[in-house]
Length: 84
Image (cartoon, rainbow, N blue to C red; front, top):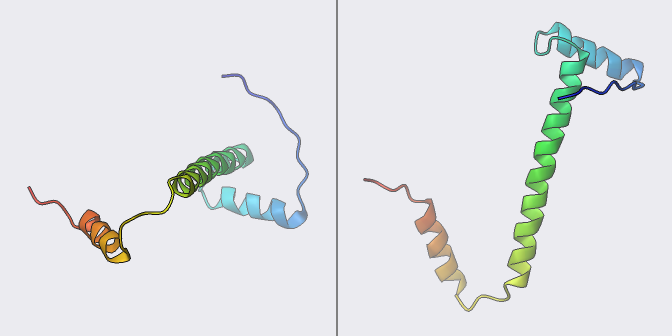
């Protein structure tokens, strides 16, 4: 995988934060910190997209004919651990 070099501008406070994260040992250098932030943002974006899709599917599925009590019972059933 090829690397692309980027130049960014940070405030003094942001730079101090990044340096502190590196000095704490959580990251070996600034680049590692930024790559981790990008990966986390990508993961969060994917989760957000999946949630939006699930909401859209729910909205498009229409109104349920089941009662609230029936829906609640089904939810409780799904949460009970399965014993083998």
